[in-house]
Length: 263
Length: 263
Image 1 (cartoon, rainbow over the protein chains, first blue to last red):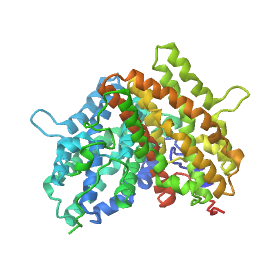
Image 2 (cartoon, rainbow over the protein chains, first blue to last red):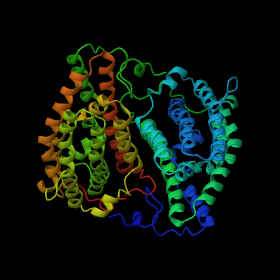
Image 3 (cartoon, rainbow over the protein chains, first blue to last red):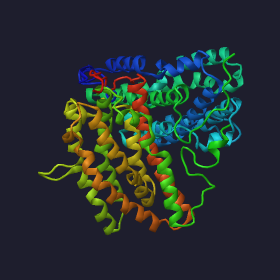
Image 4 (cartoon, rainbow over the protein chains, first blue to last red):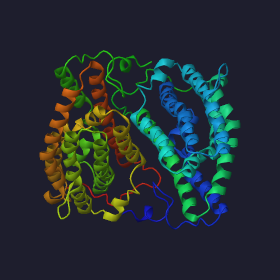
């Protein structure tokens, strides 16, 4: 038996022995979850940022991550649809704009396609999503379903991984520019933009859950929503590592042709 | 670019160049998908049936697979809910009974718990599902969402992996009894029962899709539903292999204590 995972945090939840009697205890627990479960800790990211992947492996990462990026505005529309409260809808709406852009101005999805195009992937193939790993699809779709089916509080809480994104993006920008000669500042524009967007969004969501989770049970729901979301991110990297580092590409998924090493 | 997966079958679909002008061509394509994508081909199954796993790894498989098994009657209730047609509901209803049993008679879920108990896992821990891999949860829940959101035809078609289950179960029963001294016929009763149930169910579903998919487009939807379902099964084994064979157990998931080798 697995006694260690029956007390304390499991793969699914924060556990029963956690103290969540105040907003401060909630925030401390959320930061603990980030420090122990955010995908900055995943071995695949260490390979990616440390220049240990070849071009085909970086392509596989960008191709799969496109599905996540392009699903975020759909997820955010679902979040908005959960609120009768106009002020919350107004606050959340700019997230769709951040990703979709506007007529004549690019958004995050177009910036991501600059990355995949800069890496040599055909944009229509990327947009088709036909070659992504099934695990990517299941994890990303789980995020949309979560925001539709759980409480509005949990839908907002599941965005809280953005608290931990800026450090990861800074490490990614410098690491990838340093190590890969097929990466240049222009194709990394997505991450530079998110350095400003993510803290604003995360700040709102953190204030929201601290104000609206008023019982220990609700605070536990908020923590479990963040654990859920760290799983959504972790599963995507596990699948990339299994397929493209350990060499177990599942049937029909993208097969890299470019195995050029980092410079 | 990945030309090979842009023509023909991809990770997501059967491709545009397939001929699906008749029920016979549909059945031939379904059998081809089974022969190339069913999880009987997965390396983890070869390890499981060949006696190459230790007891903890077999526990991890049974623990995770419990989540799939125990979700099947929920999935089947969703399928039933898609049909106004009473005859189809009647036909499908016995699937829930097969898994849930009845007052005083066991069903497939109880037989699965005999397996996990026989393997030394605590039943309340198994039923809590707190220690399963997040990828297992996402894949299994994708199956339920698929049956809710796609057409009723696709919901039925996604069950067609049962066409290929009996051979796998026969191989599993003989392989596991031969190789593992912690496995006995009593705890394998789930699979013996499915040897009779699966062919009846698969026969109905195959006749149904052959009769109700009347255009090439509908036949392609049926094929894509089967591909989707093979992905649901494949992702679960990829995740088990990555976590418990290659040693990358994600945060909070079950950690085996028993590393006894096969006898």
